[in-house]
Structures are given as C-alpha cells and as structure tokens.
Amino acid sequence: MSLAEEKIKKFESVSSEQDAIFFQAMEEVIYSIAPLLESCDIYKKNSILDRLVVPDRIFKFKVTWLNDQNEIMVNTGYRVQFNNALGPYKGGLRFHPSVNEGILKFLGFEQILKNALTGLPIGGAKGGSDFDPKGKSDFEVMKFCSSFMTELHKYIGPRIDVPAGDIGVGAREIGYLFGEYKKITSSFEGVLTGKPFMFGGSLMRPEATGYGVIYFTQTMLEMENKESLEGKICTVSGAGNVAIHAIEKLLHIGAIPVSCSDSRGTIYDTRGIDLALLKEIKLEKRGSLEEYVKTFPEAKYIPVNDYPQGAHAVWDIPCYAAFPCATQNELNELDAQNLIVNGCVSVSEGANMPSTPTAISNFLSHKVCFAPAKAANAGGVAVSEFEMAQNASMSHWTFEEVDTKLKNVMQQICKRVALTAKDYGVEGNYVDGANIAGFKKVADAMIAEGI
Ligand code: NDP
Image (cartoon, rainbow, N blue to C red):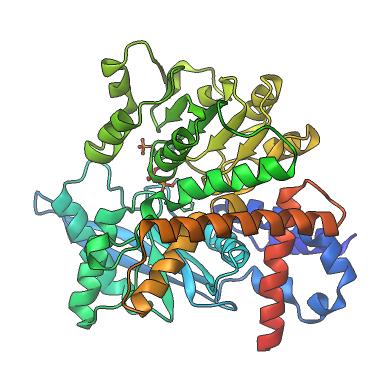
C-alpha cells in the first residue's frame, strides 16, 4: 500500500458522517501530493500530513436571539481555526442552514492551501452558523449578528484571526458583526474584512473573487495556447457575490455570459445576462431569478424541478468556458459529460469545490483546461489581505491600485501552479499543481516553526 493510500485509510477510519465532504477535499490533496510525500523524507519525518489535516482548534457555541415576534431563537455558531503557519487565521463566515462542522472543516482546509497560493501572510480558517438570513428582516439579521459576535469576539483579533464573508454573509452582515465587536471591545480595528468602504473596507473587495476568477482564466488560456474569452459564450452558475462579479468582468472583456442560477432555477439568456437587472433582483430585492423573465420574456427560466434529476440545466448550455460559482458539488459527472460533448474548452471554479471528483477526472482526461477553486477563487482572500494591510496602515488604496495588485496576484498564482505541475511531471494538471504548491509552502513553514 502506498503512503497516500495508507494515510487515506487512516483518516477515513476516524471520519464522522459529517466529515464526508472534508474527506473528499482531503483525499484530493493527498493523491496530488503523493509523489512529494514519497520523495521527500522530511515531510514524513515531521508528520506534516497528520498535523495538517487536524484543525488547531474548533469553537462551537450557542447563538440565541429574538425574532420580530419576540420569540427566542437558537442557532449554533462555529469557528474552525485550522492552521496559522503562514499568518493569522483567515477565512470567511457562512450563514446557511446546511452549515455544520464537516462543511466548515472542508472549507477551512481548502482555505489553508488557497491562502498559501496567494503568497500573502495568511493562515487558514472558516466559520459560520446554521442561521438562514433568507426571509429574515434586517433587524433580525442584526440581532443574530450581534449575538453571534458576543461569543466570536473572544477568539478573533487583527493578528489572531480575521474572518470575512461567504455564502449568506455580505457587507450588511459584516457591518453588523463589526459594530458589535467594536461595542464589546471598545476597539476600532481591522478584525473583519469585507467591511463597507466607509469604515475601513477595501475598494474592490465585493468584486475581487469574481474578477479574480476571470483574470486567472485569461492567464490559464494564454498559457495553454487557447483562444481568449473575448466574444465567447460563457456559462456561469450562481447569482450571488461571486457569480455576479464574474459575469460583470466577462462583460467588461467582451465575453458573452448567457446564464446564471440560484437555488430555485436557471436563467438562459442568449443575448447575454442583463447585469443591471440581475443586480436589482439579487442584491437589492434579494428575490428569485424567476423575476428576470418578467422583464425579458425572450430569456428562458428553467426551474430546478423541471430539469431531469441527476444533471443541472446550466451545464447543458453549449459554451466555450464554464464558471461554477454557486456552491460545493454542484457540477457532477453527467454535467461534466454534457459540457465536454458541447465543446467546452475551459472550466474555472468560482465556488469552493463545485465539481465532484468524477467530474474533475472527466475534465482532466478530456484535456479541458480546469482551474480548481483553491487557485482560481483566491482573489477574494487576496483583497481581504489588502484590506488588512490598509487597516493596519490607516490608509486607502484606489480602485485601480487594488485591481492592478489583484490581477498580478491571480497571474502569479496561475503561473506558479502551472510551473509546479510541470516540475512534478503532470503538465497541464492545475489540480495537482495547486495542491503541491500550496502544500509545500505551508509544510515548509510548519517544519521551520517546529512542533
Ligand atoms: P452568495 O450567498 O452571495 O451566493 C450564493 C449563490 O449560490 C446564490 O445565488 C444562491 O442561490 C446560489 N446557491 C446556493 N446553493 C445553491 C444550490 N444548491 N444550487 C444552486 N444555486 C445555489 O455566496 P457567494 O457568491 O459569496 O459564494 C458562492 C461560492 O463562492 C461559495 O462556494 C463560497 O464559498 C465561494 N467563495 C466566495 C468568496 C467570496 O468572496 N464571497 C470567496 C471564495 C469563495 P439563492 O440566491 O437562491 O440563495
């Protein structure tokens, strides 16, 4: 049995049911780094893998709050501080009913390697709650955030752990969380990123993940000698922060993004998605995409339940490049086959781990350029680190300054990943390249810091 297989068996035996998704992320990384583990005795000697897959600590706490009917509501809050070998713990907060320890361990683990790839001094963490902001009033969201922070503030700090947003946590939630932190600690400090600009947020943080995915893809296509995105049909899933800004950047560069989706259905608009309408529906009204066809009846709305089970409508639309930007495991083997049959040349993950392992194998074996999340969506955390730097120096950078730095980081990540893949004999495999490059950086720091 190889060392990788031995480790996978060992970790599987101690994984709980909730850990299935964490295990999925871990297994991919272990297979990618297998050649490194076999050839470099130092990683074995320092038990790096055994140490890396266990979070430094996990906080789990009760969050009680009053709803608008003055009833007491109870949710669970978490913060998984995974690894701080390279810098303070850093990673988003997710508010969604599906949140549990396993999902946050998967996201925190991915975040360690993603943050390492940026080349910036940040460790990996993730947190959140099973609270669902959907359908709640602003006041209810505020009360939940205040209560969540009364516990979370004990564990975070600008040099300790700096949370940001994720699914269900945008500028509104970050604002309420920041306000409560300030009240409890009497301290105005950069303890959260993704803040509104007026009290310390970085320009371009909302756009960063979506724009970054497109910058990464442009570099990848150039390196792989493929045609650029200009004038090409692109499909995007999701209709949140990442999807909207990926669509925005695609429009800026002259591509034609024809789709978006939410948890209830998919929009297919062959003329290209109308960005202003999409923002109005999802950002201002927090409504359903079904509303899109009321304004543009020539577009198609495909409700989730009207599509044959097993595949997703958005991945059955012919395209040159696909951008899954909604959630984990939203693109499966059938979806991958549909994309391949329809001639898709490139798939870039805006969401965290949106493609299943079998979908990824299909892409790699059919030579589809595949940009894995931990490399392609690192733009958000990169600009979060820029926000930390601006807060620490009490300064503000211009939009252009941040955009130039973001583009540079994404190009550097792409080149590092491609070169690492080449160095390890798997040229063109950005999954292995990203896992090996990220792992090496964290592992070397862990060894230098002792046990
Ligand atoms: P948002 O909450 O802003 O948007 C998520 C979108 O995905 C919503 O449109 C939501 O639909 C849709 N969605 C959620 N679940 C499903 C589902 N099962 N099927 C179809 N659509 C679904 O989140 P973000 O855009 O911030 O995050 C999206 C992904 O990107 C996540 O995986 C996140 O971890 C990742 N990411 C985000 C970063 C950021 O900077 N925000 C940074 C790096 C990664 P509905 O509107 O109906 O809820």
